[in-house]
Length: 317
View 1 (tube, rainbow, N blue to C red):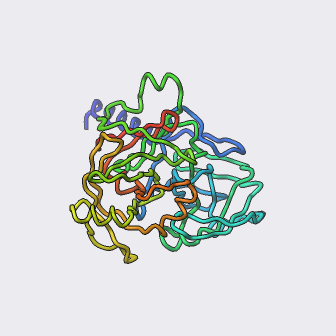
View 2: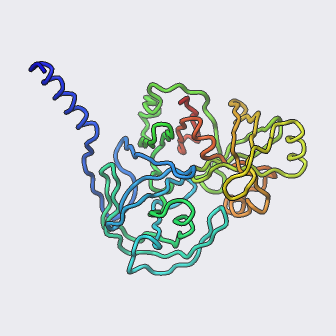
View 3: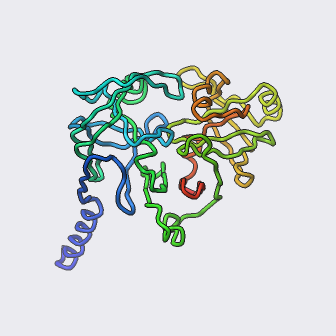
């Protein structure tokens, strides 16, 4: 190899090393995102996005769950938290209940992109053993909306990353979060009772449905009886199989979002009104027909979620 080629190869190696070297950033007490543009690698497990990290030295994964309101909640069935104080109980949208606690001090939460938080105060925790057993045994907890409340974000399942952009006035002009992207549609949403749950008007083959975006969902459809009969007779809702738990899966065609974007979703879980009662109560939803929009949609399109402007940008992969 010539000296010239060796020099070129050295430069390439240096650039590659620089691209994957992350400058450590350490913050104290409050687990909230900082910086202008921040990227977290994600891993997909059973349709859910996870961010790798450690808590007090215990290595595992956090679920990135936009439907979770607080910044960070730890799984105290996996992470040993000696000084936790029992607070009460909670319930997730799928119906499982769990005990909750408050922890005055968590020594360290560290992520693989070099960001870490130390001496965190008043951190929530819960016994999420059902997620350990059913999804991943190293479940650390949740990362929720308050963690990134001053940011918009782009979630990209194909390239396995979520990128956060601080919501600044100049960003509304530059729209750098759309650089080199093909925008398929810009969807307007309402927040309703809770700001972290974007809700959008849908039509399925002309039938009104309320859509609710949530990265912590696979995607489900719950229809009243008249809508079920009408859409099945038209072939807009078709049974497409069952999942590993024996639940019915659906293919749903002719979905129109916000009157402007048409799509088809495969593998939506079929739900009853009883099956959606927790999320309906939490969000104050009274609409007869409901679709949660999660993995089945997000695996088809990149999306940018702008809570400040109440818009979701649908981008082509």
